[in-house]
Image (cartoon, rainbow, N blue to C red; front, side, top):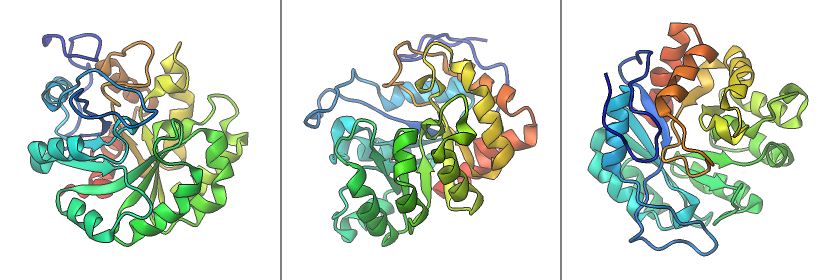
Length: 281
């Protein structure tokens, strides 16, 4: 069975694996050219909530997490509007400064925002020096801290991340190397947080590790699943702003069955773990 083409995803076929009820796409964005682009950030063509809803229907996904991209800096208006439109089946991760007034964060929390992201790969609008004060501010409202950073930067921030007063969610496989990951100092940082119950890793955007061969992420995914399956979540990264070639989201979902062949563990990664992390009932 097929659907009509959806923007920013290749293919039209449904995935060959069934996903459990309550499956969550834990990482996607929306874009609207009518909203101003932050200084130094990259614009993106329109990618709407309605388009993503069609993708969720194609994949069998029931819930989702909107993630504020660096494109809009600290202006969360577009994603907050999408969050409101999506209703109870959505949550959001915002981008806020370390000195954001707690009252503003609590108002966002009441709308379904559960965390804040620091994109340290683009470095817009936050940098490494912002991580510690941001984590302290998030602790005041009970949010988690989401980090997108190179493995080398994660290693250099090891002391800060280990001392974080809030849970730390690593984007996109924590950008760990595809060979010798266990020898990289970032692996120890990630493992310390996962195994202490204070960290999470998103199995998302495998092409950011190897654009030519996204399947090369399989060995790393299996190592993460063997170490801490209860601390992993999955996401599409639609509309794939960091991809050179737009992938087939159904194929990316099917890859999870290869990485994690045990149905019960996939249930945890796709539904149970994100329900705990993002507060879905």
